[in-house]
Amino acid sequence: MASTYRSLLLLVLVVAVARVPYGLLAVNVKGSRGTSTTDRSVATTAAVIEHPVFFNMEGLLSDAVSEERILQGLNDLVYNNYSDLYFLYSGRVLESQGVSFTHALISRFPSSQALQTYYDYAIGDIAREMGAWLKKEYCVDYTVELDESMIELNIDNDFVSYVIFIKVSSNVSDSDVLKALDAFNALDDLGYAIQLTSGENMYFRQSYRTMSHGFSAYFSSEAALAAWKNDATVAEVIEGIILPLADSYAVISVKPFAGNSVVTNSVD
Image (cartoon, rainbow, N blue to C red):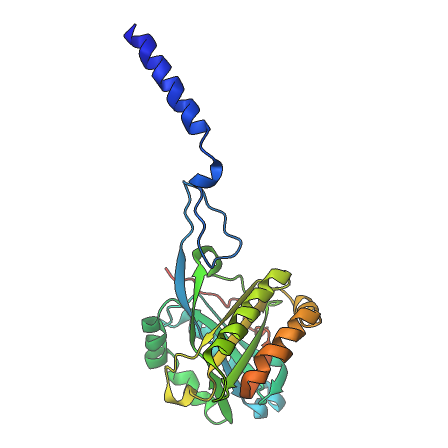
């Protein structure tokens, strides 16, 4: 009798669990895109720091040997003992608008401490070598919250980044800036880009106070970038919402320098 009672009780519990709606067992993480979670796998996010840097080293455009040496030196920063980062690559700028630049470095760090260590100990030698060629340098370091599955990107020789720096005019409201950031991030829904991020300059260095905000879009190819730029919605956001906020701006697209086949370095 006791055995029969236990069997009936177990059956009731199984039926009750089966009637729980699936949605009650799922967790939705606000702000993450393309996230699917269940009770066994809960998505988590992490704050990372985007570190795009623009360089004007126009003399290198006519000195292939020196250009290769410097770009390779920048890409080799992924192997530096003081480089704790998710990815890094440098290359010649494909297209430049606004303030003119010829080369760029694109990277992502796990924390402000990791970026500060990189500034203090990793870049000294290559920075000194670049000094003779460097006419101008802009950087916008900014924090972004990402789903952990989206932090590391597969950087190959077809990969291309499109980055906008702006200096927001003094008469622009915070709400207008927020609208621009949200509008840019929403372009992810168009499906052309691997990922989009944006944020306000953290001003790690006094020399990097020229621009106030950064917007980065990552693509698998130049064709994907071209399709994105030709979309009327993208033009409306960039030309109609973002750039009108700016006293000055700089826009570049850049691919990895082809001389280096390994341009990523995962954080352990």
